Amino acid sequence: MALEVVVLAAGAGTRMRSRTPKVLHPLAGRPLLAHVLDAAFRLEAEQCHVVVGHPADEVKAHFQNEPRISWVLQEPRLGSGHAAAQALPAVANDATVLVLLGDVPLVRAETLSRCIAASGDGIALVTIDLPDPRGFGRILRRGSSRDSHCGSRIIGIVEDADATAEQRAIAEINTGILAAPKAVLGTLLETLDRNNKQGEYYLTDIVGKADARGIAVAGVDGRVPEEVMGVNDRVQLAHLERYYQRGLADELMRQGVAVMDPSRLDIRGRLKAGRDCVIDVDVVFEGDVVLGEGVHVGPGCVIRNSALGDAVEVHPMSCIDGAMVAAGCRIGPYARLRPGTELAESVHIGNFVETKKASLGVGAKANHLAYLGDASVGAGTNVGAGAITCNYDGVDKHRTEIGENVFIGTNATLVAPLTIDDEAYVGAGSTITKTVEREDLAIGRGRQRNIQGWTPPAKRQGDEGP
Ligand code: UD1
Ligand code: MG
Image (cartoon, rainbow, N blue to C red; front, side, top):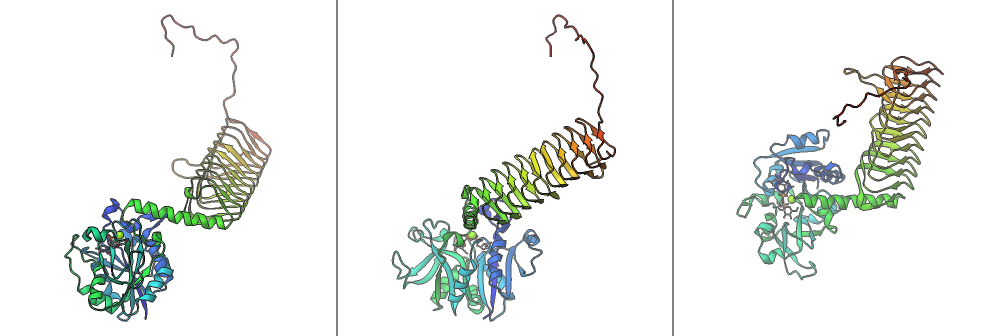
């Protein structure tokens, strides 16, 4: 039987207390819904229907480059059962339907495959025992012993809001993930009503209806709570974030990376790291980041969409964004590399140095307090403390081209467009506006004047001074 996936993602997400739709809240830097879709796409279903609520534009806009989604609008929102019913007309009659919740982000394709396999001619649902089942629908069984569900039959689901005190003590919860042939699902959805505490069509009510009609209901064990748990509020989201991040950190360590504190690392994207990299505490990786072998990343760094070569050292509190950094470079502490930065081997970028669209040749150094924007700096050149490329005239950006083995003195102001040839020197405190030729020394500053025997103004009586 062909498989079609229906993702319910129209809920208002009230408990998040947010203007952002719940399924767009990020986990590891990507919307919850993107994680659900990852698992869905891995199953290679014929169709993936995503039910969204009004206004749907924000959610749709996020996934506009994803042609595998067919969108379904649920308007008004009348509960998860109503949401599922909105998608059914678009599903092929002979399909098996897998229902996923847009707020259960970490479910694995393997769990879903087990659920689909267990559905047969009836319903299969993924359940799990939780030490704290508050807020979830509880699974009602007949003939269940306290410690085992073996041999017992699922006869219904009761929502937390509607449960009796006795039912609330049940540890086995509904994860919301279920599979059934479209015909079975369609028939059962038609029988739903809104006679419950929340006045909604509960998808979960189909389980009791199925049991009453002799339709088989199979339970599939979700095995790992975090992988099948829903996100209804920010506390649950933070819990899943830490769980997910811990998994990524463990994976890195197995690949030979030293993670100083696996609970203080965040990877919001894809990180590839070679052996013997050392990642200190509170480091955030975003987008696509590649680290060579033996890269050291100090505490508090943020590295986004960048590639760092072997043995690069990034000292504390540095931000690297959109940069290519070759082997042996030393960066920071407190450095900021912005997009378009390209550093050749063994470049040193020190504290409070900012670079943007800047290339530095082998062994070039800018060790303190400099801005290099729209600039190229040749190999072996030394950029002194406080040197600035003035790349912006208020309207346009201009480039500064600095050759090899150049010496740029402290506090030099380099007004672009500007060329400074190889082996040239710029005196400290200079404002340079014209080309400096090879091996020349350029000095552009007021000449020092010493006034001999200077007598300071006399103090008047009663003056308090500054
Ligand atoms: C739901 C289940 C509960 C289960 C829990 C697991 C129901 C009635 N209850 O409760 O048994 O333990 O998930 O996480 O299904 N949605 C719509 N349209 C609506 C309402 C909801 O698309 O009108 C979507 C939501 O976006 C969400 C899903 O359905 O993805 C579940 O809704 P939610 O309000 O989160 O239900 P829970 O209280 O979590
Ligand atoms: Mg939920």
